Length: 304
Image (cartoon, rainbow, N blue to C red; front, side, top):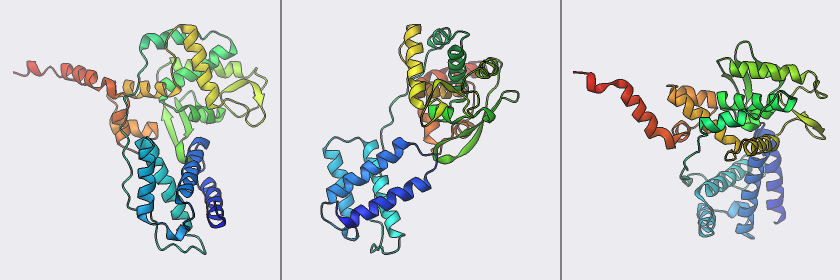
């Protein structure tokens, strides 16, 4: 990478981190990877000489190497972000953003998996009255009842949960705050039992709601996404069921909410989605079954 590119990319990365509070390290890494791939593809061409055709050629190159629509879309967004940054900086020689106006590849959304109730019961049955058992039951029930992402669960502090009123203040993607609600008695009871056990934990002074057994140098006792994934693997294996990915609990929540009649608009607000299509994707594989059940409930054959 020559000096011009090196300086622009370095400053863009600094700006990106400053402007994207709450964005995961994984997303930031993907953006940086995409930009550096693009710069390498441009070879010796200076930033101000890059054209729309160059960006399209880069996307075609990725397609020829078998990169998915989702990957190509992310790479285009990263390149567009880089040139948008350069365009607004002092000393920029750009007359426009060469990545603007290029249609982003539309990924084909795969079906999502929904966890059977029998498997949920079996896994919850492995959670005993120890600290870990109470913690894990509270996490599973919270994710199942609210659809929180695992990173959102990890970011929860004790003060973010209001058990009495059935609410949780959540820091979502992009640093956006929202309040999610939960009802019933089983989740509040699971949370209350865990919080009581948490008071006797070595890390009780840590603000994080969900604590690991041992402290880590960077995060203290706060659990991270990897710890939640590992916990679910252990619980599923102990229960003798197919291992869940953490996001499957979100899929299951969305499907259950739609079965109970929650509107797409309300579902999107509680999930923290910005795309209207997401509510149609989640639980899509069971949409026909939901539609049949809804139609049976209308009793249209009895109208006359």
